[in-house]
Length: 262
Image (cartoon, rainbow, N blue to C red; front, side):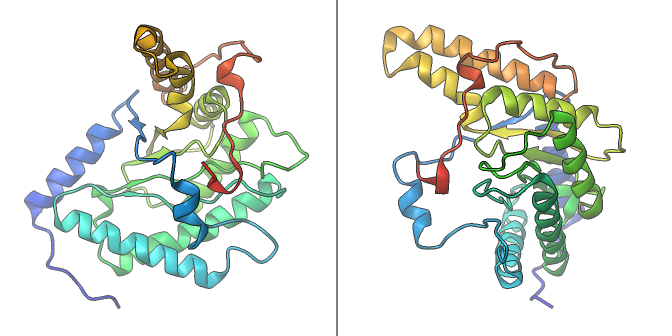
């Protein structure tokens, strides 16, 4: 059993819980602006990330990553910070939806075992997982409803209802695909005891950055694009998005980059 830090006081727990609930209030989400565009590939090339293949991620890789996430979460809470626990599984590969669901369930189960071992207060945490999607090279095309059913099923099998919210990463999906899948997740007929919202980086910023192009004169257009995507995802987080109907625009372009090499 990992060493126990001093127990959180009732006041500390309430503060953490209140903050977590405010972050995932209806229609709210997170802009993930923490990706260093010029250095991600270099930073990750030596340590690797969780990928799906016939033999990976290994049980040891899952265990070690889960324990690191749990230590991080514990340290955050001891310092009054709500940890956003992010066990990302990359979409690289040709695996199908069923295989991704299986691996996602194994990873999330290990993460919540580790969080329990490290005495993390679940009501004062948020989860940031991948949606359950097929590998980028998978020849089968799945509907948002199929993605939603697989994703919610995986969460229901592994994530305690004490967790206030799940803030999905976009995982290289196009802006529109990420919004449609989030919307379908929030319309899934299965019981969902958590808030299900977004913590997107590229899927919130790509159109805005394309409109901006580093030019001050384009700031207004970039702002409009950013607000548009924020509003769309706010609706999707409530299951109220009807889709843009634009299958060929910038928002429909894939944002996938192999091996995180961006």
